[in-house]
Image (cartoon, rainbow, N blue to C red; front, side, top):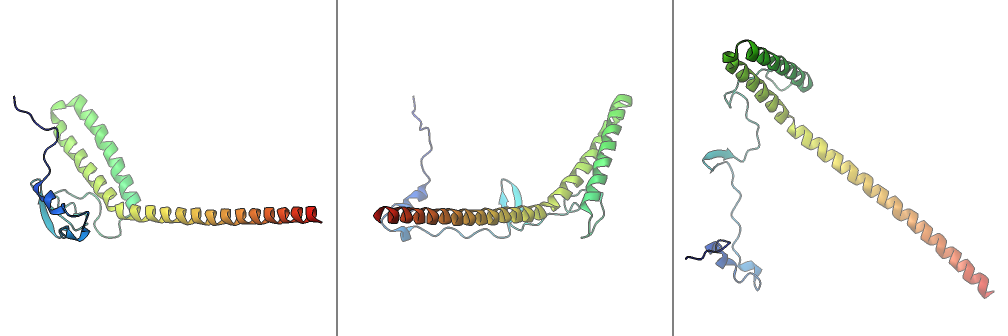
Length: 171
């Protein structure tokens, strides 16, 4: 009967760090960050943080193209269209169950467009979240400063009272 370890052995490059405690400079430098495209698990990825267009993904775009998109109006319109298609799908499933595939494809297309619109709002959401966090930190710091001032004044008042009490007992 062969014995096996619960954990695999460490990778062989751990030996590069054997003198790290005595000399931290002896460890090798980390590899440079990956730039451009790289393969991962059989798919090609890129380090560019750009949202690919629907056309690049092979999906038909249901809302107008261009930089000046009214997101609220387009999301509302797509949501209403989605509701209509879901009702049509229910009707098709009752009346003609064999013809449901086209309705499901239409619903899938609407969901992909909704998802793309929402993903294009992510940078705005990130900026708004960061602004909110920073404003809250400023507010907390101002409140901490006010609390410190209040406690300092209270301590000064207590010191004055103590000095007056001591002066009154010595006289």
